[in-house]
Image (tube, rainbow, N blue to C red):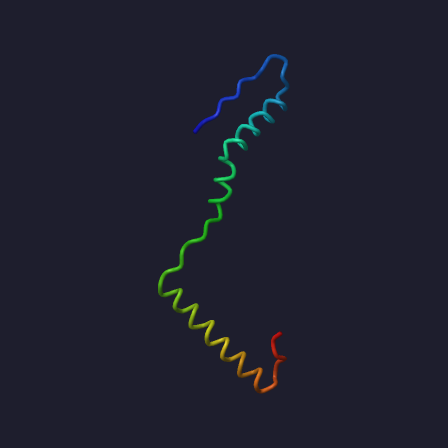
Length: 75
């Protein structure tokens, strides 16, 4: 999608650039581009499993340290 903004008579270049920016903002192009700029990749099935196992392992380790009194209890 392209935009064409023609210069009006006796219009400064700054006003022309401002009008162009407004047109882009109103169209929603800028919003879509910025939203897709940092799009995260979906994790593979194996990576999801590894993350879940690691999280479970850390939780058990943390609970064990709580019981031994080496760290303060949560909440």
